[in-house]
Length: 140
Image (tube, rainbow, N blue to C red; front, side, top):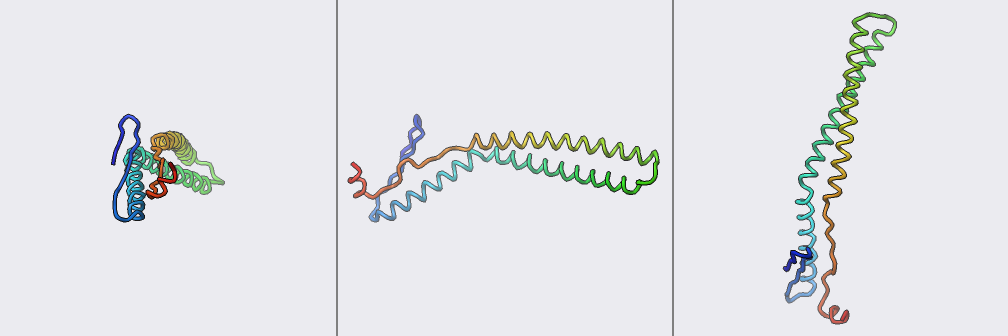
């Protein structure tokens, strides 16, 4: 295995008695290296993304529960007017608005985390696939 630091190109070669085995091995080795570098390159961003998504979902669940509570309270007090009901509704509405604002901010943070994850995802390409020696000679 040869790796050039100035151009970030890795060269893999293998000599064996079986051409097919060599090609299969090199393809498998390339896939393993690609997956390893990919996983390591995006590990922190993926973790941040997952945490933000979980928090966003939690905020939405709280908001949904608060809205259900508001609806239930309105249904209970549909034909009556009490100051305590009005105060409770006002308090719940304020809390609901705060949760919706937090949800909007979490949605924005999730979009930023997703963009960061996409931008930090490495591009790893196979430039020249392994070939058999007799195919190599016909390419020259």
